[in-house]
Length: 138
Image (cartoon, rainbow, N blue to C red):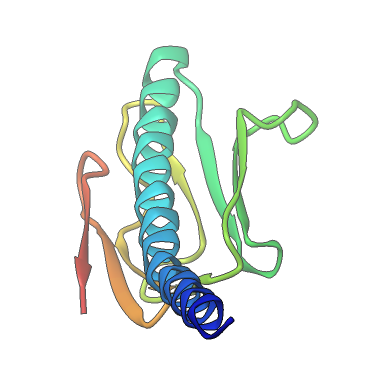
């Protein structure tokens, strides 16, 4: 009987520690997925604007944990709409949370947007010119 209690307590301790070990992995995967998808969507917006010779709007909606991409025709369906984890927060920096890619691929404004993922804070910089951007941890 004592042996069974020892085995069960060891099993319980292993189960609990594995649950705590996987939580940081989930947060890291959510963050990586968000940044990967964001990068792809920004490049898609720019390429769509250039290939269709249209202005494309990229709009973050932090209240809904989402962003969407649409053409200037507001009655047309979104080109893309993405929802992200509620653990990720997007805040305005020097760049508005709504910006546009022009038909030549340039962005209408430039600056920074702050992104908080878990306990880490990131700064996404969109540069003047051809809409180049990068993300750095603060």
